[in-house]
Length: 304
Image (tube, rainbow, N blue to C red; front, side, top):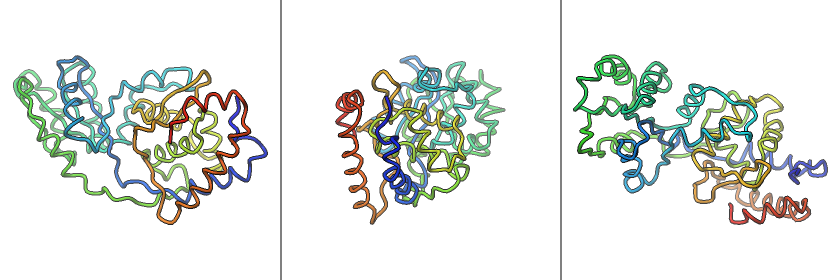
């Protein structure tokens, strides 16, 4: 089932879309995504903190890395990749990485993130002070490295028996200085940050309404003149699915925007009229689309 926008008769409209995506978007200077690592049990601190954030950190998006695993290793993505590579990209998109070293997986993440400077500087390591005498390796090794490099320093000592998460919330909110937006300058693929690429991808799916990986890559070829990383785009798709910015619909691996999530990119001042004109043109094309495409589109008619 081909997307109507990919028809050879729609070349002029696609060129308008590409020009708009390259010139009319703005993004925050830093993301609001918090990458949360720790144990999976209901009694673990990560679970408690995630629930706490729903009320006390409403302007931030909490991301659990395993939420994207189903997409990473599914047939929807053509090229699976290793976990370390995946977590490094998630970390690059995130504003902060909160780690509760309370299970084997989170012990490994603590060590890995501490040894990766670009990730270590985003880490908020939350240690259980009741057990630190049992965790000398973490205290003397990874924790020391993270405290030396993180912009959220120092390491937090928390009573896991009676947790008070206020210090973590304060670290996240008080040290985010760049909440204003900047123009998304789309030139070379390699010049864009992971977060900027995710925002561009998210906006593209919003305009397409529904799109497969192939559809997304088709547009990325046009936007970046064939000079882009297909693998990196697939990873970004999986992360956006895991963070629930995108949902999978239908039987052909289509992705659709989750209207309950905020847009990762906004339209620049002065470009709103162009956006309205473009959306109207796209809607007109959809009216003459394949019947199967239209049926699928009807099932997601409430998306942005």
